[in-house]
Length: 234
Image (cartoon, rainbow, N blue to C red; front, side):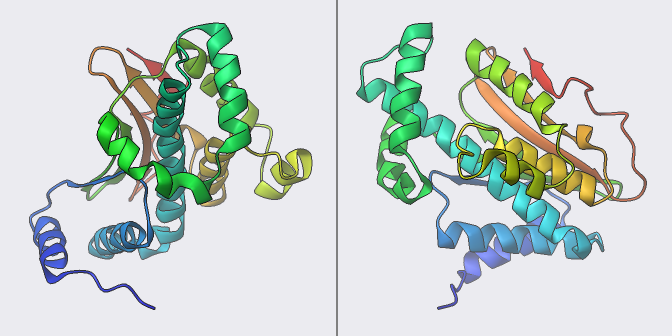
């Protein structure tokens, strides 16, 4: 059954795009309604900038990064429930064993209310100009050091693969924690003719947030605003 979006939502998005405004959406666990809203936002923006060919790239990248961000929030809830200190190395390893063995996307909806209670959310923001479209997926908490280190490793690991078939052949079904989201986004960028370094992750203790960002040039490919390390810490 096709999901119908409310006239209020449609009008708000259409008006924002007509006025060249940034568009933001907050989610906890992205369900069917959220996916439909995300598709409408992205398709409307890409239609305006005459780059509808980028829909698969931007939508799939957004979905992968939203899933990663949701997992990061749920991870913190699980650690709190187990009374484990996420900043303690031993507690982190113990908590991750439980996290990996008990969590899959089918269980995400059961954490929606818990995310709200804990104040964790995922913010999706689209910024577009004639020369560039930027997709940001934000968590309202920073990475801890061990997470930052592992994300660096995943960026390096992702460079081994030119396509997802190679990645699945090596990892089989054991993709949880293997950098699937990062690898997916990098390969999608590469196969769409863009440089992988247009994807980066930024974490700031000062502003208490983590931002995964994909910056796609709409006219000519430029790396002037990218970071060669792809993981920025503040």
